[in-house]
Image 1 (cartoon, helix red, strand yellow):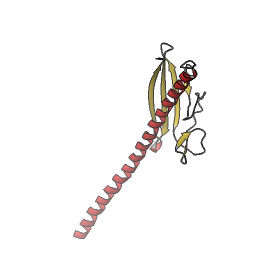
Image 2 (cartoon, one colour):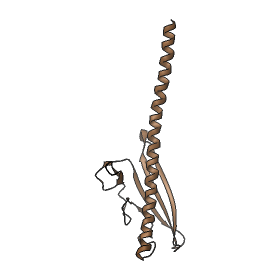
Image 3 (cartoon, helix red, strand yellow):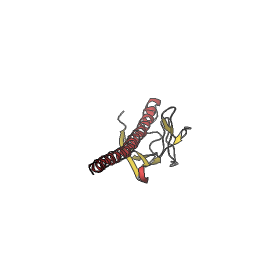
Image 4 (cartoon, rainbow, N blue to C red):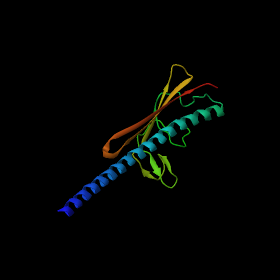
Length: 153
């Protein structure tokens, strides 16, 4: 009788440990996806910032190619906004570690959209970088980073 009670207690303890491990692995996946999404959204903002810097260096209007309101796509090496957005997911190339629309890597769940909105004057642009993906259990997630760029030069 004592042996059965001891085995029961051990089994209950092991089941608790296995359950906790399973939940931890699931939460790790959610946290990893959020980490990637935030970095992809930040990359979208940086690509637009690089376009503005390129315009300034080239001597054209600071908002050349960015004054149009709407939704667009960009990838890490974009020199201009991709219009209209294709709403296709980014691909991940494990050899280079790069997410893009053109790489030969595997298709991911991540989609990125850049939304440009001109503000009250021609001296301000609002840029939203929105990354969406389907997470564990088919739940829709999204990250929306916003930045404002000004013609201060």
